[in-house]
Length: 228
Image (cartoon, rainbow, N blue to C red):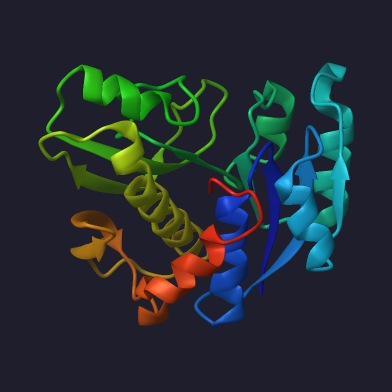
């Protein structure tokens, strides 16, 4: 059983996806805690689903509270979806256990957060955008990539037309990275229909087809006031 801690700042879309993957049996894991830097929808979701949650000060010198909590929780995987830099001593203490999700094909557009990498790729007229799930390193967005997803850009695309597909690809990439981290062997790369286009995911994992069901994605999107 994989013990997962989420660090969040916002809507908690990836948190809700992982919770759903656990619920339908696609991932054998336990959500141990949600740690945030502010009150947000991730806290609300955690409370509603009886997941321990706490707001902490990430500007604390050395992020000592964060380090103590992660040690006490004995987390196997820490998802760093918080809009804060994890300081060097914490990165080193939990090396190999910190996973991040970035909305670009790293190393392109490293250091940007949220949808900014997608905006930058569109501004550069890139024919593809993508998502990377990677290990966290002391250099921002420079850790070893575990899974990447490639999304073709279509004529007339904007950030708003792409972000639902980017979000779904990010969720699946993160799930694959968790499985890889737990020792599930990669089988092959493959293409999936996500939203209105095909997305190429490498490496692909033997995922439950329920994860591609529109009703599942709708349950995640329908969370109150959620923009993923």
